[in-house]
Length: 173
Image (tube, rainbow, N blue to C red):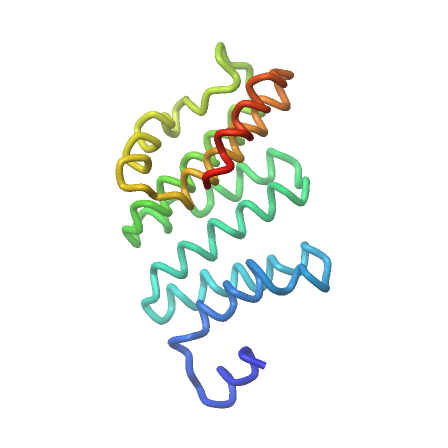
């Protein structure tokens, strides 16, 4: 209904927001998760087109998470991160860009051998550069997303004690 209303009333300033809500929260309740991708990339594109950079960046980060959680090959996910790195950096949405970089690095770490595989550190970013700031400003959204990423790394690298501890700490997010 909201999507039809945007077209009917030419409310383009709402398009990025509505597509994010549909693709990031509503659609996958009744449809396959893969179908969310079209709404999320439309949120990004319409946000760019109409100057709604906050929702453009939210749409893109949700798009990237969805690709990851759909089980797309990590090489493809990494290529997609690389494709949107420059355009997202240009629109100056600092917290979303940091979140994007953190997950880009996580994907890279899953593809390569690192000395400390459960740490999100490498050529793209270092989690310590962002997480302390997010904690200081009480950015529960980004801290929660970081926490999910850490649990994934602990699980994949067979550190179940750390994974369970991380899950317990993450309850506050």
